Structures are given as C-alpha cells and as structure tokens.
Length: 149
Image (cartoon, rainbow, N blue to C red; front, side):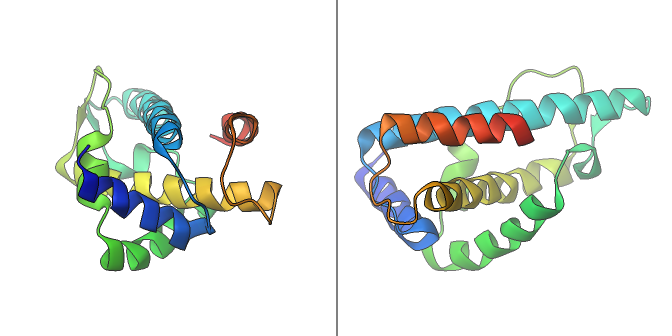
C-alpha cells in the first residue's frame, strides 16, 4: 500500500470513529475484512446453491438491516475520502463454486465499506473514549463480529 492510500485510511478511521490507526492496525483491519468477506461469500454461495444457481447475486449475501444502513453512511463518507477503489483492490475473494454476478462484484466495495464503518463504530461502543485501538480491543471487536456475521 502506498503512502497516499495509508493516509486515506487514517482519514477514514478518524471520520468514521474518531480513531487514530497505525501500521499494525491496518494489518489487523485487512485480516478482519478478508475474513468477513470470506464469511459473507461462503454464506452467499450456500444460498445460491440452495436455489440451484451457479451465480451469486447480491440478495444471496447475508446483509443485515444494520449493515445495509451503515453502507449508506459509508457511501456519503466515501464520496469525500474515496476509499472504495482501494477496498476493492485489497479485499481478497476466495475461490468459490459459484460465479459472482457483475452486480455482486460492483456491490462488494460498499459492503466492505459498511463493514469498515461498523468496525470503527464498534470500537467506540466498547470504549467511547478510545483513540488508538490496542490488540485486546481488536480481539474484542472481532469476537463481537464473529457472533453476528
């Protein structure tokens, strides 16, 4: 990741949750995103297969009401900071037994952006005064997401 991209993520986390992140946080963030995208795609694949389709459509993804709402909040913030293209490049897509539809591929950066916003806000829910998440904070937030997604 180049310096300009790092500064965009720093700005994003400041705007999304009032957080100051460092290089270690970015590594944890990427790991978190890749795991959550993998989880969403695997469940989406199961939905497509259950409906006897080889193409994963956006409605196959298990997007909750809360995630849907925060994806809209992300869209507004992304217009200012423009991290979607970077998120799209960074997010690993696991090999699947189905093909992602074009609409699903186009939607994934917004889903990832919504997950990113939810992550930043979850830190603040755990500790409203938090400025720089530590390892134990990341572990706690990840455990919460594991329960919900």
